[in-house]
Length: 177
Image (tube, rainbow, N blue to C red):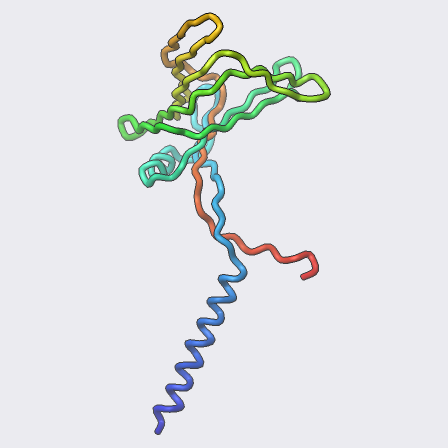
């Protein structure tokens, strides 16, 4: 009958272990967040991250976003920041990424009035952005009824490449705890 006390101890350990696991699950959540993976300066030079990591995430099927920002030269408090989903991704020669983004209408910001606004322009932009800082574009001007193709050139803005990742984070406790 020495087996029964050992069996009871084993059952108690399993229950305690399961209980601790449940408490751990209650204190954490899984959240999807966008992580900066790779960043270039306005000349297309790396300033942060790993292009190899970006390529690995693309190959695994993670969604990618690209961001850039600009400031007015005569008033650096006037700024715009853009982020877009990368729709069609190409890995060239295993070491460079090119992304087509969803075509969009050009916009002109009004950053000086009390109520900020954006005015849409009748020009559709179709872009390919690269991790080497390049842009290639086709622009359709609906008023002039023209199509302008621009061969690849330096974009002139730093590009930030983001990937969506799933990270466990601690559950936020109420203020009274």
